[in-house]
Amino acid sequence: MSVVKDKSFTFAIQIVDTYKFLTDNKKEYILSKQLLRSGTAIRALIREAQNAESKADFVHKMGIAQKECDETIYWIELLKETEYLDINKFKTLHYNATEVLKMLRSIIVTTKKTYNL
Image 1: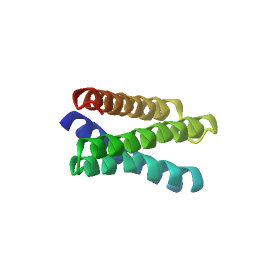
Image 2 (image 1 turned 45 degrees about the vertical axis):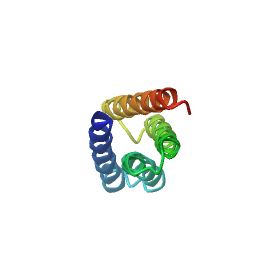
Image 3 (image 1 turned 90 degrees about the vertical axis):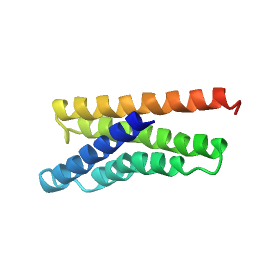
Image 4 (image 1 turned 180 degrees about the horizontal axis):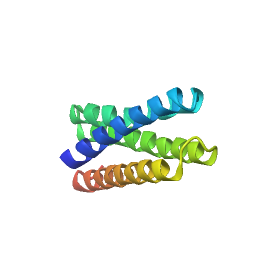
């Protein structure tokens, strides 16, 4: 669990930095705000899941984090296709988001199997 916590926090920092870049340099305020919201929500939801009331609640909160991560990937792809992100920034963000998404999926599947949820 600590690996996904660390990676999602580092990713949230990258998202904040990207938001600053998009608003300051590209003067893009709408898509970047969506990216900021979903990209930073991932770690917040993981943190919330740590304090879940039950294993089912934990899985539910991690599932929401998974959805936010997938949405973040969409915004990253859209920002690349609309030429707000260059290929290098896109690759870095996309790779890191995909890594977090894979970890979240694995945690959810493992928890469901372990606790017969």
